[in-house]
Image (cartoon, rainbow, N blue to C red; front, side, top):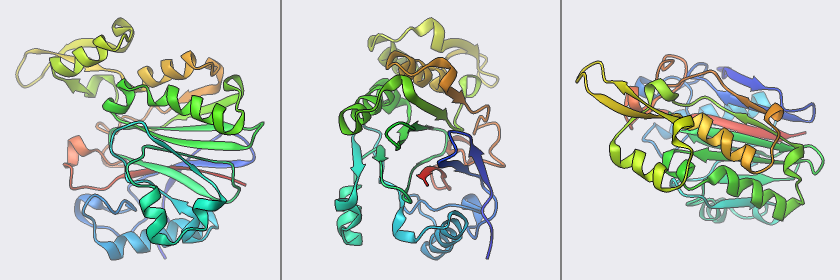
Length: 266
């Protein structure tokens, strides 16, 4: 069996937090080699074998590896015993159209898929609750990180100042060129644009374009929610620049694999 290559994060002794890399799987072409996302066009047999390999590495069963069908909105789903007892079809329906998962059930791996978007993991050690967030630019501008912290507070009594957060691999400022219309959406949503954007010359057109810093924008949202700056770690990995090791839709196209960023409490 292939062994998936993972980048692990230190969020605490009682959790395992990670992002998958492109290596150690069975997929081919633009999905090579490790992809478990079934919504991006990969071969279902390869996806199944990759899931089996990841579950074996994590020491969990397949029904304890949960990933939503993301739609770039801000809905969060609480994974509890009731959801876990559902049939596979019912569970798929429950996880349809959401971009964040949270749970306080031990031994369950929740995660999100990205390929330039920003994955965020949250861990509340006091309540032993975890959360995985998918923050594309639309989710970011809709403040999904802030909303997820609020959801954890409502669901588990989480105190934001006790959260440890990991912002995972995603597209960074220098690589994330956007049109004026995207910049304006952020501006109209009252973000501090001077701290999350700049204009850079496009090397092909030689025209200046706006660039947005999605990791920093999400970091600021966590700070605004009460998470301590010292408790937030930002991955240095830019998926666009490091597409040999991490999937990048801007590099490889939409029909390519996805990074899975997950967290499991022990």
